[in-house]
Length: 162
Image (cartoon, rainbow, N blue to C red):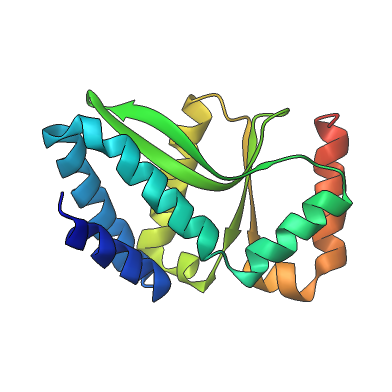
């Protein structure tokens, strides 16, 4: 994979063209893993770091809410898996290590049917990897109903004894 191709992907992240990014990124990554497996880790780390650098306001808010609730997490955690003998990965927004749960913040593009179906597939794969549950909050919920989000986080904390 050429540096220009990585830059193209990162530009898509900056412009929030996530649907196109998901399609392009998965095809590009499949190509990298198949032809140059030794470069895939570096590619994953670059993508993760870009997501951290360009985090959304809602992700920043949820970080605050998690901290206020005393829940420890890993932000933009890479979770590797294999599909048809190919090593693949997901980057989840928040990984609660002590409970093996994932918390995602979904933007408006998650209302798209294709993205929604991809989210369902992703959740199923994550659960087969030992993730107990995937909780999702919309950007709207995080912005407009912080008390309800914090209440849900406290329920999660109590349920998993965090």
